[in-house]
Image (tube, rainbow, N blue to C red):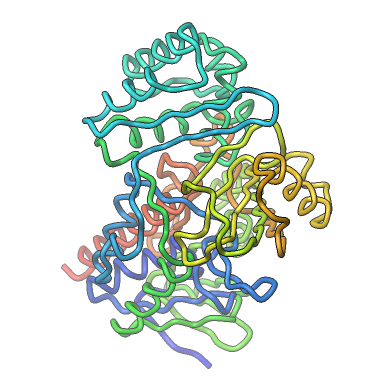
Length: 443
């Protein structure tokens, strides 16, 4: 079976869906091909132990402008999808004292500075060191050159081991999914700037009212189908070939599709596999080979529905779990999501041992809770790219050496780490460049 389409998008994750939405909104016919039967890529809902659950616990923030814009474009109100809450970073520890940072309802960046002044868990000297670092970041406009690992940069700027362990390390893992001792200071500072210094509500947490599938992939499917896009799922693209007229053909086991423009909205390794037969892309291949992956492990503990964390989210230090999120907001009362971001010894543990360890750690913090009724472990071994120092130097643009072959994905040159917003921004940027190319061709 052979067909043709102006734009063919390979990959139905958040980047591919965002590109498709932006193009469809501008009346450009799109064919999107996804190997999984569900859309959403690494931000999707799965069936696990008789539960409809996310493939990993995701958290959005108020600075996710493009994601919120696309949801509004598709006809969805933020208040219907999210419970917006001001920043509250509350951490409990198994051995050390806890930590609590709440940002007051005043303009940024004063809210962050006043929040730090009132933070519990740090003494006067530690707060003074954090405040001095904030001034340093502001003076350099949250940018450094050359890049270096975040741990070294923090130590050079007066941050003690306790401050790093209880404040910067959890933030780094949450935002970059990369350990602080190898993480990119450049990317970390970019996220801090955009989250905490531009607008007060940018640092708000957006807790989803539904599972991740109902939040974005399902609305995207409905919108695209309504706008006559062609969606092909459960078909993996096997190869991309260039035809005699400089167009490209995308092949699956069942069909071949010719495209005026092709968007590869897939992870670096898959992008490399699909383009190795193009010598003109050798520099791109060298970039793609530089990317490593980083895992996210989510342990879902199901308790009776009356069990509640008493807040949306809790940081944990001194054990394997790093965050605990109450899924009650997402219509799953009694389910707690325990998160372990990044690589570590836990990746060598069996799921059974991880479930046992997580249950024990939660029981230690909440001894009055009953035993969990069920514990399920989800490992996304390649959840994100490893956001190590120097990574921005190797991140490719949306354009390639071919004027009708494009890239989209959170790993492209967005300046952001591997977040849902980074994927969306890349998809939208790619779509806009295609629109410009189509417009120039027509004229």
